[in-house]
Length: 555
Image 1: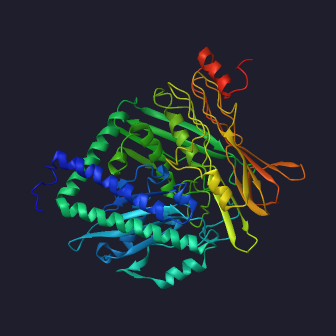
Image 2: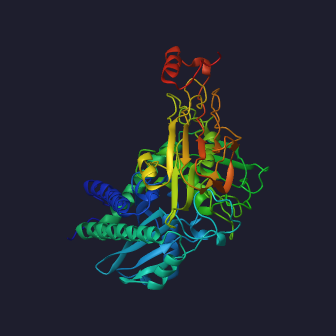
Image 3: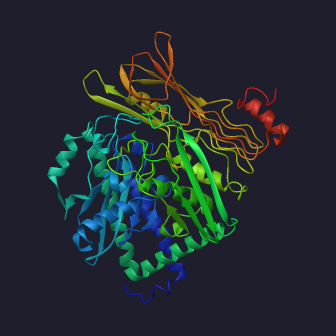
């Protein structure tokens, strides 16, 4: 089809078709990935994102519900491949795999796969996804390993390697992955699912260009980006110009247990431009509580997107009004060979702290603090037949009270989007556990005119000997309230031994768990918003009747 539309004359109707098509393709990629994946972190929890990237490594679109914390780095991974091979170094049938720590800035389990998209022999873009593998080799396995001191202990790194070249599989690389992961069937099954997802996305994008022509499609995408930018700038312009700052604290890095980790941010507003400055962020840590630059940029992007355009689809234009100042060597921009295994732990608190800085300027937009971590658990060991098992799950907590309503209960962190916890029934079918309790945690939300949401109580009883990683943070610095609201409850974990003894655990790797032991996770509640004395009597009565609180405030 020929079309005379130029970049400056994108037809409004075509713009809307393209706008919805590029997101629909990313959603279709996500559906294909979740249906074909082998591990529950992908097909149940949905710890992944999918998207389309242009030939300049810019984000065309991302699937709805994709992890917000992946807002910065699909393009970064593709950019590294472009730098390595050049735009003329890709061929139809290529598939590239990437998880290298220095570039991606995340734990190595988050593996990027992407495929080039061609039309009439021309490279027109890439279809990419990132998904969490349950294992990537290394010294430790599972969530919450504090055993690594550098990236080399955390697993195999693959930097922009072609797992397929012109349609032919690289058997050597395939075998390396098989031989260096504890769960090779899962790893390779997930890799195949990611490849299928990317090939689908590349095919769909090619079909769109075949229908309208490359020039028209790219003109429409440019228009979509411009509109997203204008929407974000309109919100920033309403924030009073000024310099705003805030700080908070994480417990420690898992090694220096008596040394809190400071999260310090400055936010500058000038007209329609926002700058998030991490210059005073805690230096990179000896333990694995670090991320590369992608982590820091993603944290700033999530806060910015939540504030300016939470209802719009994700694309490159959303972030044009945002500048991120991130000098090398902070915990959000760690230099190699820093350990990155727990890269995500700090980021919910980073995002809350950015919003905390802006709360005095826009009290009508900013809620109190939420649970502040990306909590999860892992139990792993050997079955009676000698085969390995690993149970990995995430869990929610309370969100902060808002300017006009209570916070949400039992929701995952702001970094995690629409991810879900694994159904209890599947956990009990597949693993030697009994989930004794999965309930809301009374009294965990901070009091206020609008109450903070509740955390949860989750109790696992282990039916056979295994090991566990416990990776709690924010056990000292509670989710803060705003404008007179009270803080929420902090995170906690209790191991109840079969012999009747108990132990409080915060950060521990490979804890020995005996058959009959129980592990109780108590997740944080959200902070309250506004003076508790302003909460209505009806709301207080409802809190009591629903079991949200067990006594009236002040009684």
